[in-house]
Image (tube, rainbow, N blue to C red):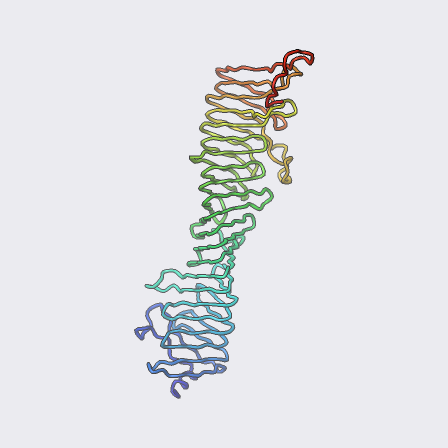
Length: 449
């Protein structure tokens, strides 16, 4: 015992040995450099190893490695290969710096279990905070990458830099459980919340790969744009693709639904593209259940839909494959419960954004207004118009067919219908009601009455 105490006083407490009695490459052999303020008690075990109880400030390092441990006090059980660190704990190595109230170092697993106000900082500047974190060091021949498991709803501020080394706005991630690998892979589960200056996302689980600039949200994911023109995207699975740390593409698969100020898009798959200003520029929708685009003035269904929206304002909606568009008739001129409709192999809707302010409020007055609908390829249309006889109850009905049909709008209502290339059609004008003194029984009220 006396020799062990003298050894400790000289700063050479017995190292942590491996099960074979020797330190293998990459594994930590702990040594305690001389510290005059440290108080110690050593108890020799039947195996010949020691249990050591240290106080008054403890400092240890891995021999030949840039790995250090600090704490107010510590307990070391050599037979078990375990060190308990208590009070103002600080674990530091090139890959990570971790502080906590207490920690347990497991020599066999090269593992640090930190508890109580844990703060972990990565070389990139990424910071993770939480009540409990389990860190596994990268060891040649044991594990290729370091691994961190955090529970108790940790919060991570993910810091990334672009190709020029410029730090990008941080990404905040909160979840019930979080696993990180090598400061580049993040697995989050349980009420996941991801926030950045212009986007907020929620899901039950998420995977982020900063090396590939890829993210995947699963089980009820929702992405909301929080800029001056907000949008929302939902699906069974949502994938995010970035380039040079700027979000460029968001893909929703399975019951996708995208909503913006101007339009709502629904389909099995929705693919949204963002521009350099991080606003939506283009969206695609397709799938077996067809795609639907709904705006305040029209509803379009087709096999696939493409939306052009520079500056996140809808300019064109291109619908291909059995396209069908519906709109409400002009209620100031006609009275009917039926809708106007347009059909074709393809339909393109053009919107007028020239008179809309770039940063208008979220009101109907600030939305893009439909200008015209163009149907091509076996096109047909049915539109309700004001009857020629002002006494008629029902509106007139105009049915047309042709190679191309153009419907022009004014004040969100259809005003003219132009048919070209093989145009045929029919116009039905309703009969006026019978005179009031007529002996004939009154006609039954129609849906348009």
